[in-house]
Amino acid sequence: MTRLLNRFSVLIFVSVTVLALVMGIVLSTLLTRTLSAWEAQSVAAFIQHHVHMTELHELFLAPRDADTRDKWAEAVPDIVGNLPGVVQCRIWGRDGEVVWSENAAMIGQRAPANARLQAALKGEVGGDLRELAPSERAQEFATLIDVYVPIRAKDDVLGVIQIYKRPTQLLSSLRWSLAAIWAVALLGGVALYAVVIALVRHTGRRPRPAERIAEDIQGRFGFVPPFFEPALATPAVLENLWQQTLAAYVDNPLPALFKERLFAYLSRFCAVPYCIVCHSCALRPLGMSAGDVLALLESPPPSDEDVTGALAVLLDQRAAIAAWPTAGSALDRALATCAVHMFLRPDEADSCQAEVRRVLGPEPYTHLAAFLGYVKVCLLWVETHPELAWEADERARQNLTPLLDAEPRLGEFFRVYPERVKRERLLDWGPRHGPQTPNARSVPGNP
Image 1 (cartoon, one colour):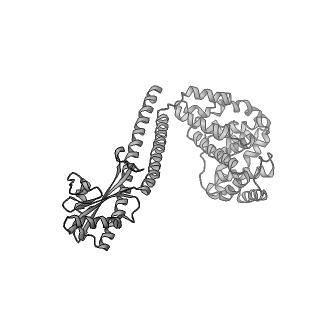
Image 2 (cartoon, one colour):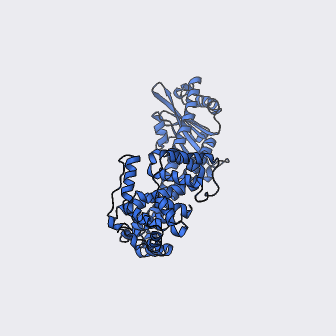
Image 3 (cartoon, one colour):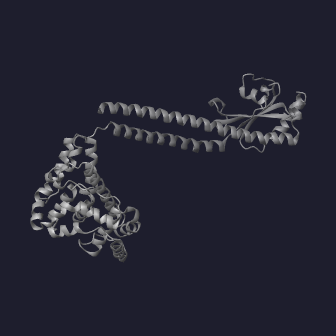
């Protein structure tokens, strides 16, 4: 697979390079032609205006004798005198014959194969950049623009004035423009290559085997929680679930006690007892007694008065905190209250969100938001897999019995909590999002 990807990468590189070169050449050619045409039109407009103002068009109709040639020799400096960079001028009659030239040997010659001249004799302005051969470079320039200007009398073309001109400004504009075009073409090619290769490698990447992912999970938890078992047959889903767990839960820098307290409490609102049992058990190694766990779980959802009080505490905190407040402090409780409100009533939690973000600062707030999102994913995951058994989770195996021995009412709470949550919702919120009641035999503490 790697060799195939490498070969495909080379093919993509060659293709993108050719595409960039073709694009650069095409754009450069179009730009050169456009600027040349613009320069030719500017020169033509100036010369045509001068010819008509001085009535020089009559010379095209005069006999082609020495006297007429002398008049052309006097007129040409006036025609091109105000055009910078003109190095040569040639006058063509309407029959395509040279009427006047600085090179007397050219007078009387024709150029039937000159396409630009033939087009000018039909009334079309033309201009081309021309590279001089080394033998032609009598002065310090190598590139000229060759402009053909048709001279009209009404609708009739009387002749053509041909100008050789140094296109100093044109070449300067071309250099910068061509440099920009080639830079864009090459950078665009590099970017396109990078994107295509990234897509190919991402598409061609196979998910890790489930066994490898399970080894990672085992290494972090010391066991593979039953939570992951439904995904073991689908490595891509297992990898996604594990990476979310790592980023938003395991490696989330929020205090462990705050995370577990919040996770255990929010699990009250899930119909399947797996999360509430396992995360309640996770509180014991963090120092919470069985009575504290029960008090936490028995707390009703924050009322409007509770949320208002929590916001008042946050408002008293003028600046963003440098470190998470002490567990159990007024600020810690206010943050937890607002987090629960944000989880349960996101459509009514704008004030909580704004104050929590201000007090925590952008980065810790992002971690809190990620954690709340992960909890929602977990609760939905276990509700869609009600067969998940908390009995197989090491946290419950090690801590549930000591908790129930210390506080037997905790087992009763686990048994009846779905009905209690349903009553709380009906009393406080109305009949919205009422959880289903799980099978009683799946709840610890049930006789």
